[in-house]
Image (cartoon, rainbow, N blue to C red):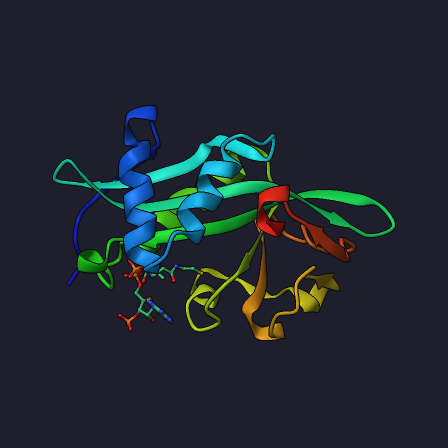
Length: 172
Ligand SMILES: CC(C)(COP(=O)(O)OP(=O)(O)OC[C@H]1O[C@@H](n2cnc3c(N)ncnc32)[C@H](O)[C@@H]1OP(=O)(O)O)[C@@H](O)C(=O)NCCC(=O)NCCS
C-alpha cells in the first residue's frame, strides 16, 4: 500500500528521532552512530540529509555524503548511506520517495553521480548499475553486484574509474 509522506531537509530538532529510526530499521547502533559522526565531517551536505514525515512522525531517513573516486585524477561523487524506513512503514514506497527526492536534490546541487553499497535487488530500479562497469572500485571487500553507481547526467561516469574514498567514519 502506498503511503503519502513529505520529504524535507533534516532539522536539528529531528536528530533524536533520526537516531532512533536508524536503530529501529537496522536493529543495531552502527548506522545511527555513523550518521552522528558523518554530521561532523566536511563530507556532510545538510541539503542531502533528508527525512520522510508522515502525520508529524519521522518515518524515513536518507543521507548522501561527499566521496572521491580516486584514480589517476580525483572525481567528486556522493555515497548514499544510510537509508532507513521505520519497520512499520516499510514496503509502502517511502524509500522510493526518499531516493527520488535525494537524487533530484543532488543533481540540483551540481553533483553528477551517486554510489551505493546496498541490496542489488533494490537500487537498479532507480537506474543504478554495477560500479565495476565504469572501473569504479570499493575500498571494502564486497560482492560486485552490491556496489552500484548512477550517473546523474549523460556520460557522467565515463572515464571516472578509480577507488572510492569515503569519509573517515565509514572506516571506523
Ligand atoms: C531498504 C529500505 C530502506 C527500503 O525502504 P522501503 O520504504 O521499504 O522501500 P520501498 O517501499 O520504496 O520499496 C519496497 C521494495 O524494497 C525492496 N526491499 C525492501 N527491503 C529489502 C531488503 N531487505 N532486501 C531487498 N529488497 C528490499 C523490496 O523489493 C520491496 O519491493 P516489494 O514490496 O515489491 O517486495 C527499508 O526496507 C529499510 O529501512 N530496511 C532496513 C535498513 C536497510 O537495510 N537499509 C538499506 C541499506 S542499503
